[in-house]
Image (cartoon, rainbow, N blue to C red; front, side, top):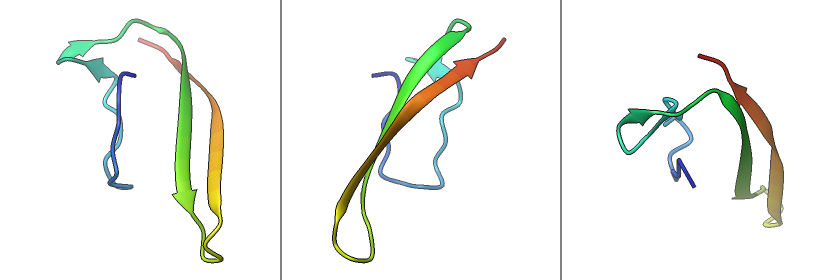
Length: 50
């Protein structure tokens, strides 16, 4: 895991331990509870280009 937050306004800056991550594909996953109290999981990939 290179990034984790519970604040929806806090985005990843492309760093891990204060060092720039290399270009490549990174998996992401989000867990949240919707307005019907159902737990939702979404996941995908993001490409980091330097």
